[in-house]
Every structure is written in structure tokens, then in C-alpha cells.
Image (cartoon, rainbow over all chains, first blue to last red; front, side):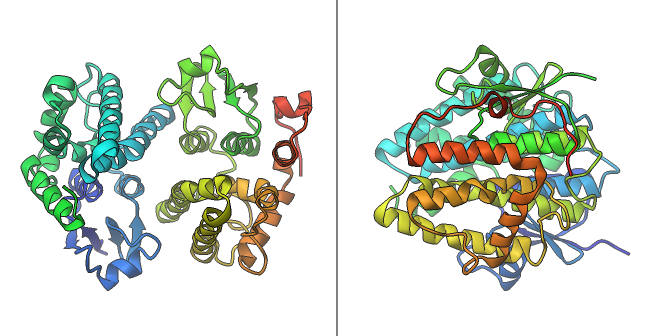
Length: 219
Length: 232
């Protein structure tokens, strides 16, 4: 019986991007259904009634929600190739810890940076810089967060690499100067086809952020 | 077999989750009570990113963040499984655990709020818990079915401390009238033998919050168990 895999998707969403990368890594054929979040489909509302958010993976009619939960599901069901999580429990815990850190910090603080003004924006910028410092240190001299090969932590973070240009312009930062290892890592990840075909370009992301800001009435 | 140490804080629900999981797995561990106003060198070394408890140290490897620790315990000691084997059911269990993590802000608002803010927080909390009850728990006795699993453990604090908190705030949220199944779940959870000590510790702590007085923390409660004891 052929698997039916559908992804309720959104191009610029870093969370949806994580799932796209995971699906590409595993070589899974899927149908991408792009959502308009200002006019959510009845499928989305039915498949994710609790959060009404993308991404949602629908596997043979059953929905799985929350990006890193979907990624773990994909890793467990399609376990024959390209393991995303290591097999050792200690390394798995390490991977989950950092994916959780990225979820707790990078998206919400990053969003505050581009979606707010004045004091909130300034303190968000400081916080974001601190977070990237922590990540830069964690990466260290390794080619990937997962060490020798692209893995769970890399997948969790790399969609946010496409936001670097946005952070630079709106946050008046120089990512290359302040976080050279992270930038090097980002470029390295983009050399993987599974990653580059799943992500938008940095300038494209910036344009979309500007549009969102306009819609929300933020300077 | 490498040594297991848990750095915790006896009033912390996050700490209790780990104790319950270790006990359910029959893992012997050494408990170290942290004074959060004066954090130990060890804690700062083992959790430099957040400097928080709980931290599990297995051999010389530290693991931080309670939900990460719970998954680690599940994978390292696979007997008496606390997550479903089926990947879909497992994803659903993780979803409901994450749901709790997302409602922490609502809990905090309830915990800290007063007056109008408290009323608003109580309403939001009720809405969140309704979703948990209807879609997460459904008609099951526990989130894990007939026995508890990591989802039940992650919501454990609702089981005991919450009633005392409601009393302190003078606002009831988790009642048989409004949340019948979740209320029943809480009662069932509290009756389980694995949490008797922690229940005692938390009730004492919360009593101290309500009517501040010197609470003598007995050695037994402060050291939280230690080795596994057979219980029904």
C-alpha cells in the first residue's frame, strides 16, 4: 500500500521548512498544500483543531502537529535511511535540548526584533545576540551541530539562517562579523540539496517580513 | 552501572516529574537539593545554559530540561515503558506534553494574578484545560490509558498542588462541574503510590505560601526517596 503523505505548508515558515527538509532527507514523496493563514482551510482546522497552525503532516489521513514532533515521527517511521536523531540516548538528549533551546529562544526573540519597536526591539536585539553567542559556542569547531553530519539540531536551526539578512537590516547587526562560525555553518548546510531546495532565500524572507510588518502596521 | 544523580528543588513540579519517572522505572538515584538562591558549583557546571533544576547526571553526563530528561529516562531504562511504542501514538503523546509546555504562561498568569487579571487568567486556563480534557484525555482514566505515562507525569502538578493554589487564590478552575474528566484524572493521579512523598512536600510548601510560617522540612522529604522502594 502506497503511503499518502500531505504537508500543510507555508513557504516562509521556518517550522514548515524543518519538515520539508526532513521529508527530503528521507526521500519521501509528498504533496505540499500551501495554506493562507488569513483564510485557513477547513482541512487545517480539522487536522489541527487545537493550534490551527502549520505545519501539519497528514500521513495516510492521520495528522501530526508541531514541527519537531513531526520530525521525530518521520525519523521513526522512515527509519531505513538518513537518521535525523542519533541512536545513543545521551546524544539524543543533547539534540533535543538544543532543538528546544532554539524553539524557546530564536523564533520568539527574533520575532520581537522584527515585529516591535523602541525598547522591546532593543532588548530583543540584546537577547538575540546572547542566544547566537551561545549557539556559536555550542557549534565550536564542528562542521555541524550534530558533529560530522547534518542532524536534528542543524535541521531545527537552519531555517532561521534564512532570517539572518532580516536580523542584520532590522537589528543593525553584522551576523558575519559577530557569528562567523554560524554563518559558515549556514552556508555549509545550504550546500546540501535537501536543505537548499526547502528554504527561501534570505532576501525573499526579508521582503515577506516587510509585508507582514506593513499589514500589522509596524514601522 | 553508572551513578544517577538528580539536582532538584523540593517545591518544584519540574523536579517531581523526574522523581516520578525514576521511581516508576525502578532507578536508584542520589537526590541533591539545590538552594536556588545560592546555586551550587555543580549545578552551574552541569547546566550552564539555563542554570536551573532539574538536572539529571548519569555517570558524568548532565541532561537538563525536564521534558528532555523524561525522554532520556524512557530511552535509557526501557522497562515499564512510559511512551507508546507506535510512532503515531507516540507523536500524539508528545503533542499533549508540548501542549502543557505551551500553557505555562497561562498558569503563571493565574499564579501571579489578582483582581481582573486573575479572572482573565482563570478563564483562559479553563479554556486551555477544556481542550486538554476533551481532546487529550477523552474518556481514558489516565493519558496513558489504564496506567500513567509521561503525559500524566508532565501534568502531575495539576494533580495535587493546584487545589491548594486555587484555595490560595480564591478561584476554582479544576472542578467536577467544569472539568469532570480532568478532575477525576487528578484524583486518580493523586492516589497513586509513587507520588505520596512529593505530594506531602508540595502541600507543605504551598501551606507555607498561604500562611507564612516556619516550615520544618523533614530530612525524609528533603532527600526525596533515594533508592527505589517496592510499593503497590
